[in-house]
Structures are given as C-alpha cells and as structure tokens.
Length: 423
Image (tube, rainbow, N blue to C red):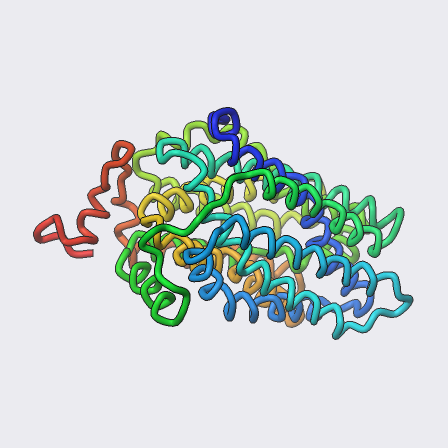
C-alpha cells in the first residue's frame, strides 16, 4: 500500500480519518436496516423494495448533486450533507426503538438518506483530486478504498454483534455518534472553492457533463462493466435469507456474510501499491470482473459449507477492489477539474445504483426460484455480460496510462488529435 498521500497531504489525511470513523457507523446502518425489514416482514421482496426505494432518489439527485459540487465550495457542501445524514440515522434510531415501527416510515427515511448521499458521494470523490497532486491520485484512491474496506469488514461484524446484544435501535444510534468525527475533520481542512471555469448548476451544466461522458468511450466502458458486475453478480440482498434459512447461522452469520467480501477487499487494498504502476488498467479491470463473477458462481454452489462460502465472497471482494481502484483512476485522470463533480456524480450514480438494481434482481429471482439459483444464475450472467462489454467497448482493452500529466493515446483520440482513430 502506497501511503504517501496520508503522510504528505494534510487535508486529504483529515478527510480520510473522518471518513474512516464515520464509515464504520454507516456500515452498521447498511447492515441493520435490511435486517430490521427482514425481521418485520420475513420477505426478501421487502429488501428488494428497499433497494428500489433508495434507487429512485439516486437517479433523481445524483446528476444535480454533481453540478452543484462543481459550482460551490465542496467542503461546505460536505458539511451540509453529513449533517443531514446524521439526522436521517437519528430518525431510524427513533423508529427502531418503537415496538412495531411502521415500515413505510423506514422506507421514507431510507429515501431521504439516499437522496442526500447522492449529493455527498460525488462531492467527496471530486474533492480528492484537489487535495493531492496528480502523481499521488491513484494512491489516494487506493488509500480511500482501504478505509472503505476496513470499515466494511469491521462494520458488518460489529453490527451483527451489536444487533444481537443491544438491538437495532442501538446500531442506528451508534451511526449517529460517528458523524461527529467526519464533521470535525471537515471543519479542520481548508475550503475547496469551485474551479474558476465552473458552470452554474442547472440543466445546461448537467447536459455538459453528460456530453463529456458520452464522448469518452473509455469512461462509458468503466460504467458499463461495473453495472454488469453489480446488477447480475451482487447477492447481498439474499444475505439475511441465506444466513437465517440456508446456513442457519443467525445474526452473527449474517454479519459475517456482509463482512466477507470486505475482508477480501481489505487484503486487496493493502496490497494495492502495484495498481498505480499499471499501464493498461482496462485489462486489469476485465480480469478483476471475471474473477468476481466466477467467485459469485462458486459461492452459490457451496451453500453446504459456510466457511468455503465465506472464502468465495472474500475472493470476490478482492477482485472488486482492484476493479474499483483502476476504474476510478481512469475516470479521475481523464476528467478536467471543472467537470469532476458532474462526472463523479455519473460515476456515483452507476456505483450506487448498480448494487440496488442487483438487490432487486437477486430478490426477484430468489422469490421465484430460490436463493441459491439466484446467486448462481447472477454470477453466470455477469460473465456473459463481461464478454459483451469487452466486445462493445474495445477501448477498454487498449487504454493505456502514460506518464504523469501526459495524455493517453485514448484521450488524444477523444479530442481529435490522432488522425484516423475512431472510438
């Protein structure tokens, strides 16, 4: 792991530390809310509906959130979004403390939190390139993923124990408390004012970001391959059902199922120092997604052995973090700063909507054919979709990073500087 951004860039270090603490609380809520819905309804469809409820505000607010992030001080915007997310977690804690919380209210709070998160995520992502120099950006992205995967390991395990010993309401209250760290960190860093050429937020600004993304085939390729992996190969909506009815491991086993992919991702992030030296990151993404799909198929076939199933999920998580770091590096290095908020919002839209579509797909198939068939068929479809993405976006296999500050062959083609080259 290349830790130079943490050692040398103070504001990035503060942002990273605040996110590390708050991320643990957010992971507890991510685990606790589906578990509470399962306990109230005993239906995987209720969790699939939760995914759709969260998807709607993501689709509605992500693009506008990116436009706002480009036009205002990103630090101030992050303070506002973190405060609103803390309030939403407090509402979940209050609801969970009731003997029979209304399910519609849980969905309503999840809807609001997803909308705020749709603004928070692209703002945070687009802020990172302003806090580190270009040559340390891939390392900063990897370090950021390290913190994310660390809390993704600790969060579900801690959530499972917290729910089992103190209840769901305590889990949500813990999330509220962790927001103090992120808010303090944001108050300690310097302002991140908009780029001098930043456009005012509005439909024209959003359209400009969409045109940029559509004109860059390599950017579109990173979006397409992530959607393929998440829509077909993401079985997390089935974890409550698998833990309670297939593996018979209870709340603690549910926490381990959620933590296993993050364990693999954490190991992958720790050993990610080589990622910044990859010259053809598109090929690395393809290999990583193939590993993800194969691991999900194996997980679905090994439901008779809980330990082996966890190993498969861990392998999938390791492949996913490699893909994520390489994809994020491509998107951030190809995009100019005055467009980073909007392109990050599109990236965030893909990254956050894909798993929710995957939850809905997995829950629907499980309701018709059982959870094991849903997992295996999803992994197979992920591999088939990967072949389609590679065929439709040959730029993914040919894209090459050059030296720091130098355009790639692909980016030159995008602006018409390579005669005869068509994307």
